[in-house]
Image (tube, rainbow, N blue to C red; front, side, top):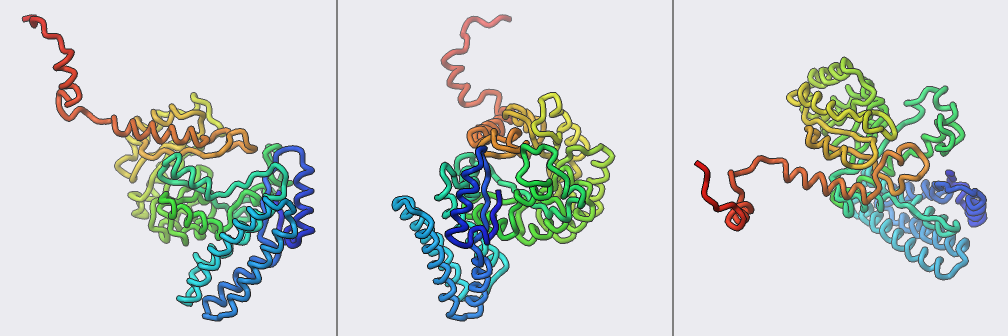
Length: 410
């Protein structure tokens, strides 16, 4: 359920959101916009600060007062209210420091502007979450933190779609093929519900950088490719569904300097050859990483077809930067085998709960599974070597203690 700014514009409307959500019997995901008018005020305050105009402080203080007043007007439980107020003040202090920096240098980059705008939804979601009985606030920063610190993965990857460009009007307005998994009346509404805005991607990237983990995104269309390229991630991923979108690939080859990762699910071998040849002609093949992949959610073991990795290694290892494996299967044993067969990059979907609504979750790993996979891959990586000498130092100790010392046969 998605609620726009007017739905969270007053204490009365926020309490209506609470009632609407609590009437729904099944589990539901709730997304809220910034309080009505706050996004515009965030942008105005940014511009005033960048112009060296002291009146930015007045606008900023108005936003502080409004969020505090909204919290006090909607939350009746004193303990909860004080907790939320403390969090809101902390976030607003963080925002205030950004504004001070903009004012001092009198410069506002598009990245900083996008980060500032993202604060509106962070603040409103705190208030709404505290009101809905039994709700839990999921902060994307906590997902990233779990992946970086607990799972210790190397990179996290998000998705970006411009649904009006990607889908035909018929596709956009058609019902979701699996209505039980839908977050909207049509497939287009469902996809819009799941999208992060560009400003949210800016914030996601900044959180990744704070936590020392690589940020990346899969792009499904030219508009999304252009928007994510502006963020200059280390790599951009092209999903299997779009690896024949040559207009987008051409633009990326000419305008994006990082690695381009491409999955080869639902792709014929002649299409593979055409794709790699395209990157060779663009002189970007040494920035290309191709992934063996079976497109399905989840994929049964007998459809994973791991030996496709060996085929890709034999045919393309000298032509591209690396060979990877993108798995949509259950468990982690298959990923270990993929690595030993030559896949130097392993991609898995990540979720906090595999039982959540949507086909992706069933084919994903929860934090403990992702952590175990990273540990196992690290151990296998350390072990895949020949012996440096006929007898290793650890064996010398055991040989002296255990080796048979009887008379040798002639």
